[in-house]
Length: 151
Image (cartoon, rainbow, N blue to C red):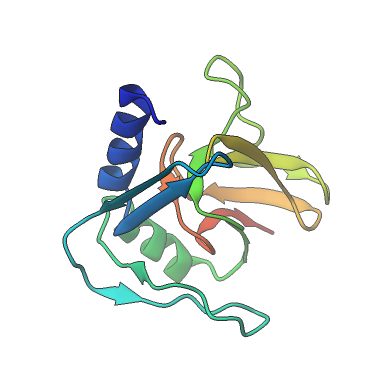
């Protein structure tokens, strides 16, 4: 069974995200299903051609900045491999893993994405210099969303 605090957290995550449905099932079989009113949706292409459920498209305050940043520089990006909450540092009192101007090597941790209470370390896929941080700490990010620009 889910506690009231867990349910409130799920509702908060759903309200603050661009997701329209949030369904969580535990190993013990307990399940929670939350939905927002119907919204415009689009699909996300996947490299292996597998079908991915539709994800709602909602404007966010950061969207114009991200679009402007990608229009200015067509450099490579480090993208979110999963949907979850973006954390730039290992803890609130710690320094961010990377910042603009920092050199990274392939395999260096650049951030954490929390998905279903699991902390997933996101690593650089190549050597380079971070030229922009495109996500805000504590913000919900979507699959494929650019998190960093790297050159």
